[in-house]
Length: 276
Image (cartoon, rainbow, N blue to C red):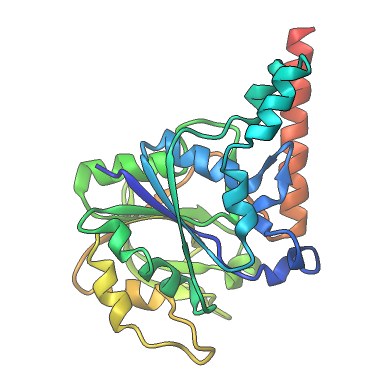
């Protein structure tokens, strides 16, 4: 079924400057783990077996994080700290990397994964968006939907009207208890958004998306917009939208990043109280 996923992580992180000059936003800590660790765990829970992380020249720290540190493991074993080995255990999944040499947008980053995906449907998880508090949410919900209908699936969330200008917003064709059929997507509407349903960084695509990405022309800033390719594809293939459950945090926004850490701290405090 859905065994492959891409995580585009090559962006400059301009909304989080100046710290992103030296630390990729994907490695911002939430509790004691970086944000991208939660995203990879979500992929594993969704049944993913292979991940392609799209990085830039300055993002080598991401591959370092998901590599084993034999020196540290040896140090812990030799100094009676073997109990800490569990803390540095990385998710058991095959991870590959590819560089995006130029900042040409999300559509270009996904297009770099064409050979990785082959003829298989695949997931895309944007590492800005982190879901906490429940298992089998986020990607798992999209995978369940895809299993039923074999259609492209978008993760959606209801967003306050004043914040919709920061998201791709769908125009729904119809709704039922299972999903929302997508008629079109408006990228960052400045006024009159078609709904309050925003696309939030979780996708499942059939491989035909690559055909439309290849035909998408760069916008005024030289970027290939994923939304443009998706709207073109909508003329030929259906997209189902699924409202994602759980606590969602956009870590590129300072207030949500702080809230995510507060959530983890409160959760850990609750666990410690139970133990006591």
